[in-house]
Image 1 (tube, one colour):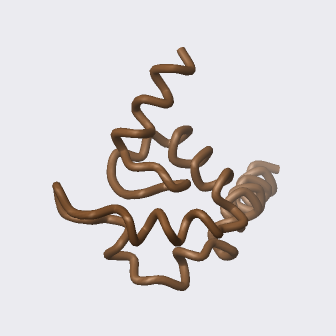
Image 2 (cartoon, rainbow, N blue to C red; image 1 turned 45 degrees about the vertical axis):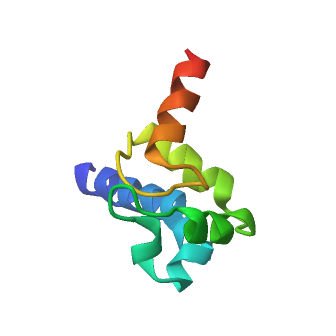
Length: 87
């Protein structure tokens, strides 16, 4: 019974993360989404604008407290501000 629960959890996680397979960033240079400090985020944000899973990506980043990179079209600083406004 315990094994079945583990398998169910793995299937659920796979379903939850399946949005990543449809993301435009998966087909793009990942370096753009993790610029060096002070580097431009413009290229990554351009990709995010046209991405069909942008909302899922941002939701994932907020739920998992992603500290680095562009997620859902927002930088870490922008996500922090968004979280503060939500509180």
